[in-house]
Image (cartoon, rainbow, N blue to C red):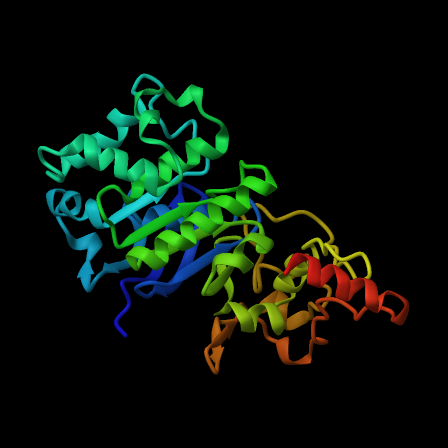
Length: 335
């Protein structure tokens, strides 16, 4: 299958800050690739580079086989219909002076869609995201955070795109609302065959929506794999630490928390060698001197010299015999 989006050796430096420092990835039609990492790792910058919302320092981006960075500005504008974005802050991304109906009608007019039936199309979009057609006359401040994010999603799908960059779309929402929005995104993906570049810092959220996961640290991708493989057998020590921080809802299960020592180094002066070695419990002299490449073994890519020697990650211990019946009852209740 030909990738819908392909990035090769993307670099973005803001003067001395190395926000994105040589990353490559592919995104296929109908799948969700999650970019995951701590704040400041460069994942949101990578998403903006993929859409050419900002210009890279170097590197290449192809969308549906077309060199996105080689296109003139007018040609890029014509592709905007196929590439949309959902932002983290649903209120900040909506114009407080416009009604919801006007905001949804704006991209339709811009791209010449639904001519003569804009009101009907706006009503369709609101119903599509779980809102009522009469909400079209309201302003953003009259909605809850979850409802505002639904409006942002409706605006993104209004022009029938093929790719949507979801930039932390649920991080500002309550946990219960997060689940509703994730379910909505999955429903829309199945219905329209959308591809998502899903940017997040929460692996618990990513586990429910991603097809593949790319873990970023200090401007680099340190692990890239199918979601099931990454959660079952993570290979990079940083991924181990991120997974160990996911809360376990079942009190009968136990897991050792892997707490990283020290702070994230400055992206202005990243460490020599492996960028993670200053916080890695398995670091050796080679890690301090030589940067590991992102090497692939059966489709599972990892940037670590010694990943084969690291003890396998235990996601959680089994319930104790005393709690086995309780665990079964809890599982049955949540089925």
